[in-house]
Length: 114
Length: 110
Picture 1 (cartoon, helix red, strand yellow):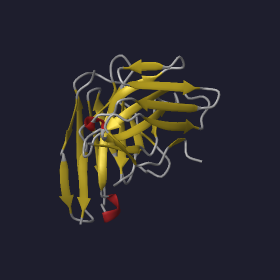
Picture 2 (cartoon, one colour; picture 1 turned 90 degrees about the vertical axis):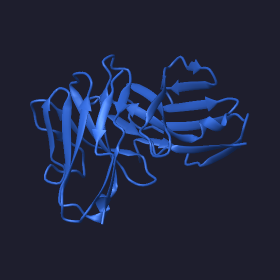
Picture 3 (spheres, each protein chain N blue to C red; picture 1 turned 180 degrees about the vertical axis):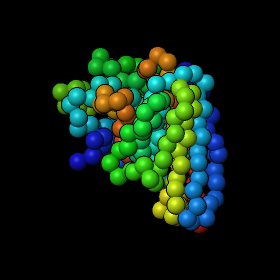
């Protein structure tokens, strides 16, 4: 299994500001994934973060808005930049466990932009 | 067409009922399949993987039909604690990325 610690668990932010979300995995993992879950909806992949290279973004998501860092094999951050109320959502990080048979998730960050 | 489509729900069933969820996926190259459970305000957690031969875990049975690109989950003898959103999840194999269905909400009533 993998244990992923994500913080903050929630935040209320002013529009125009930025928030950085951190995820720490208890084991070394090649890839980490960042998802967004809008109210009442399912998870949408934002990007895949690989250590030592630039993140790979999904259609509709760009690096300027969601910069990602992956400084080592156990840690990643996602920044939500220049926030607007439309960014209010739950953000989750994820990685595969060491056996590669199950994906694990952080506890999520519930973001409200006012 | 969405990559993964599920029954829209919600499902409201009495305790003890049998309930079935259906899911279809569009990418025939998809490699692995899962059902995840998400409780309110919690992160998703793996309920079970889905294999071509079908697999059972207690009251839960999952089936995969690759030819029809169809996945199902059957819950027998529903419990109040089964109330949650059930997510159909597919690994297309491209960078190990997962694609999630919209989820089907289940409420089991006393």
